[in-house]
Image (tube, rainbow, N blue to C red; front, side, top):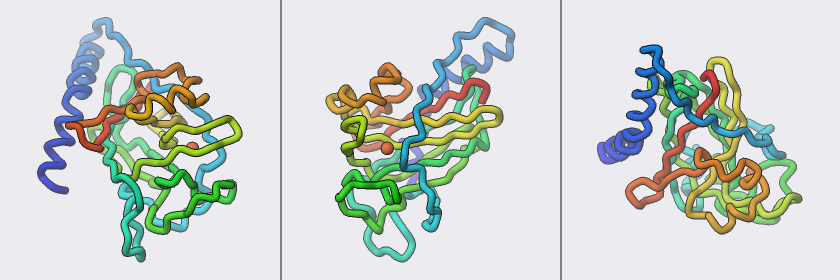
Length: 214
Ligand SMILES: [Fe+2]
């Protein structure tokens, strides 16, 4: 990893890390602690991968054997898995899946006529580090039509912590117009915890996932 990436990553974590550390310290001291809002759950949807024939590492933009990197806007997403008191959840497992930049999933249920992208991995299986941190490199998913209406760009997460599992979706702040028309986005009440933030004005996002007891 480049040094600049490390710096940006650390900066991205700094704000939420400070708040979480403060809460965790108050919790240990037995003081009253305002709990973090838990990340709302969402349906798993019809496209959870059924074929794990590709690699599942944290870089979805490169697939072994394909010379071309995935098509679309490359984005880097970092975050942490926390319990509701702000304690990091290390060793949490994250299954992550999404459509490609054209809005197509590599899945038998897919009816989209958009092209597949053989350079796009589409699925990742990663785990959080000691500080609950995770990181992925991917392409910004496209939006797509579905039986419940237009789906704004989103990424699916299935998160297993020590005692809780959460299936949810992540959205992008720059898509406010299409987010507002997406029934699933609206169903979770526009919860801020689903909206990631750009870091330093480039396509880097941070998103913390809060499980009740980690
Ligand atoms: Fe989806």
